[in-house]
Image: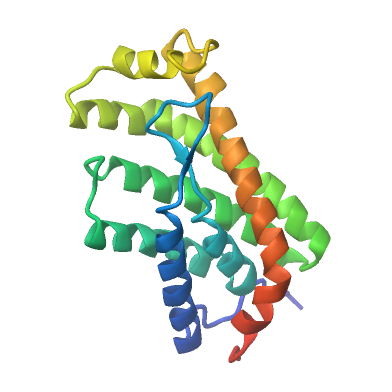
Length: 206
């Protein structure tokens, strides 16, 4: 008999309610940001993906992805955009890659071990997706939105990171490690909180 990885009804009323609550918490966490000394100043670490990862572990990859989506929609509705929607797009792409990858692995065989494995693989996938999406999509869009050129962005990275000497080295020496650090922090916080939060999220499930 084929084993189902996720409930047949992914978006029940209870699930939608929990997605809404976690999205609101995630939105609030977006305001608490810390710069990284090796990354451009416009890139800062926050832990707003923690609710998304917790939700993905508890309810599946689709609810996790919706939490990441909704926090960005809330941010646009309440705060507006300072990056011409480029930052929100990047946040959604990168965050979704992280929480969905980790959740898919975890839900194949739920255990603390697979949660750790899923998180580690999720960090790696997120970091690769972030590097590629920034190289081909995000940075070109950001430069176009603000009337800048790519060399100007590289100069911003080079001013804080001596390993940045070109567009390519900026991706490898700044963008890649930035996302590995961010993913590791989010993963550690999630592991510390999940055991305490998961009983609440599992209430009302059918």
